[in-house]
Every structure is written in structure tokens, then in C-alpha cells.
View 1 (cartoon, rainbow, N blue to C red):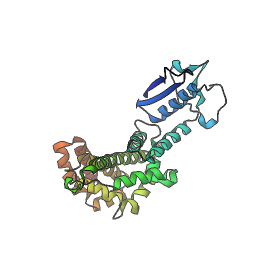
View 2: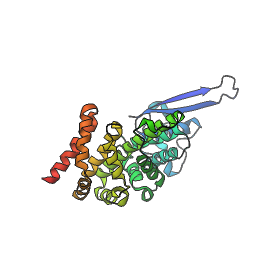
View 3: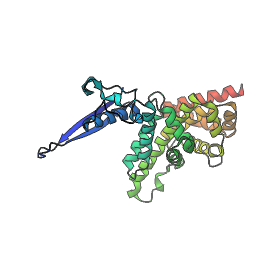
View 4: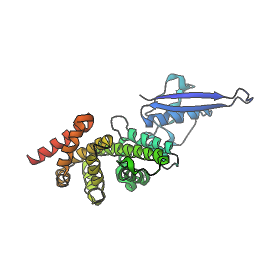
Length: 292
């Protein structure tokens, strides 16, 4: 289900009786929400549900309540193309990442966390491809932004802050780093479920396994579990998913000392972060199976 608010505003002194329509999502699927937004705004502008519109503006998966019936047909029937709704939602998230306002960027990350979650969004495959494959998926901006935020690790030492005025910016960077790790974990899980061979091809590349690759960042996060436990949880989740991709990937991760780092992080998780402990247990179980 998708839940959102519709607010109507009118200036009491406005003789033209112009009404401002505002929509705000509370929770649910972003794809369905965006389709609802288009249908409602089209109705607010006096659009005709029976009128011809470009095929790409239609979405057959949308269902609106009877209160939005326009004539004898539901306005949502104007939007028949689910693929367009999915692409539009991913594009909307990408556009938000390009904004120069911190709140807009975080909203874009929030959208990607939802869109890449296969249990909550039917756009998860497209969103995961955008995160992991970038150019080939037509969304280089999304991949570059997520990878940049993953690599931009916040300091674990408060004494590194030279100016207290920068505290806010540093906190926001830490939040975006954590959200980017969450997006990466969701994308890996979705890709694992849909196309394991293609996923293996990218995670054994230099971008992931190199000296400055993503794997090094994830291992570093686990090593700093005492300081940034929530980040360590997302890193452990990413690495646990990667262990399931193939024996070759598992062998490469084991050679990087993953087992010792997981054991150390598990001790931290057992004392104060059960989700971290669970992910470490899962990863260590997979490594144990490799030895057998």
C-alpha cells in the first residue's frame, strides 16, 4: 500500500479562487506514488481521462480509489505503461541527487533505499542496475554518487574537527555515507536474486577488488565497528551478500582476511548491535562451508 497526503490551499483574498494542490508521501512504493501524483495533478489541471495522451504516460498497474473517478473511468487509466513509471521513479531519484540542497539529496537517497529494496518496490531491478552498472544502465550519476559516498568515510575521531561550525556538515556527510551503504546492500541483494553472473563480473573487477576498491572500504568499516556500528552493519551485509555470489568471489574475500574482521565485528555486534552480529554470523557460516 502507498499512503500519501493531499492538501489544498486557497487564498481567501484571491478573487480568482486559485487552488494550490500539494502531495506528500507518507510511506509505500515510490513508483505507485509517482503514478498517483501524475494522475491527481492531471485531474487538478482539468485533464480528461478519455483524452489521448502519449503511450509512455500510461501505467496499467495504478489503481486509485473511487473518489478519484473522472466521469465513468478512473483517472489512473490514463497511465498504462508501468515501465515508464519505473524509469520515472529512478530518474526522479537521480534528479534529487543532483540538487545543491542537502535535504533534496537525502530525499534522493531515501528514494533509492526504497527503490532498491525488492521486498518493497517493483522497480528494484532497474534501481539496482543503476547503482551497480551506471553507464550501461543509463544512470551514471546514481552509480558515481553512491560509490563516491561509500568511499567518503567519515572520521571516527571527534578531535579531527577543526571548526565546530563544520559539525553540521560532517554529521550530514556521515548520514549520507550510511545511507549510501544501505543502498549498496539493497542493490547487491536485488542483483544477486536476478543476475548472479553479471554481478560476479563486476565485483571481481579492479573497481571492487583493487587496492582502493569498494571491498577495502567495506573491510575498513568492519574494522571500525566500535566507532561506527551502524556503518559496520551495512558493510557486513554487503560482504555477506558477496560471499553468496560464487566460489571465486568467496575465495578472493577470504584471502583478504575477511574471517578475522568478521569475528572482531561480531564481538561488537553481540554487545550492542544484534543486526551486525547476525550478518557476521551469516558471513562466517558461509566461510566455514567453503573450508568444508
